[in-house]
Image (cartoon, rainbow, N blue to C red):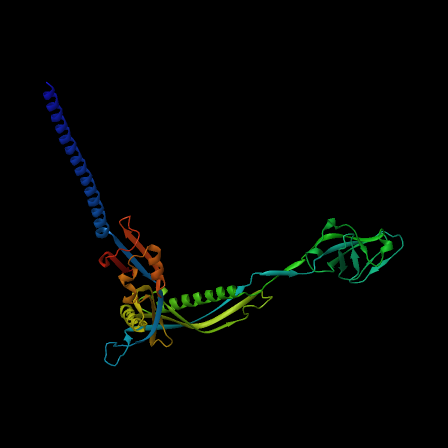
Length: 392
């Protein structure tokens, strides 16, 4: 009986050992598997980081306008070997003249002596009082006025006379409410002989008419517009087809004026102008082609052409009608050297460091940087994942 118990106990111990060993092995395998999974995920993240990370740098060069003008001859046969730089064209001229008067608006005002009327009262019973021109009268407020001419006021009579303020300016303006004016040299008769305002004193300031540069330029423009209008009428009457009014060329040969900018006390002035109005027809497409070609020749070697501004193209007929001046403006930008676009120079730099690196280069106005995906914070180490572009 005792032997059986011992055998059963040993058997149970052996079974427990086997189960414990199996449990330990299973936990080890699980831990190993978890560690392997973590390593695998990290490896995948590293692979994704290096394989997906991208950096795009867009360089914006500084732009500038570049204008050029060229004289082009007008020839009957511009394609002839000896014609040189020429276009086909023709011009019809009309001599015109115009005279116009202009008024000048006041620009400022200056002090002047106010004028009005006073009535002098003599309430004495026996004093016949004579007042010479410029006799002074003064009220309690200190305003002094003078009469313009000599008058005589009999006892118990009154006389109206024109007067003016002694001092120029707005302070010399007065009305009926200004009170009594006493004779300055007869203070003892202030209650017997005095004056009152019967017509208000006005004109303490007067406008000063000065011819400004702006007013003169506006008047000159009106005269030139009138010359163009007269030229258009003449050319329309002498040509089978009406010319384009907006394309007429005006050359003012003589302009006289009765006043010049800066002249003062000018109420009006007159401008007389003489000149010639030309209706010009030309090969516009060929002129545009020529001026573009000539501009390209003038571009500095350190600049490149971006685009022409065709809206800036203009043609003006020169004196005599044998040539025109054509002009146009183009946009240029500096040439960025290839050495400045080396990808290896920015590997590992963050956004701000990349910006500082490129903005130090002459001719670069702005730098736009974009990293992808969102977790990328610096330029990748792989050159083929770095893209540097120049915006045109």
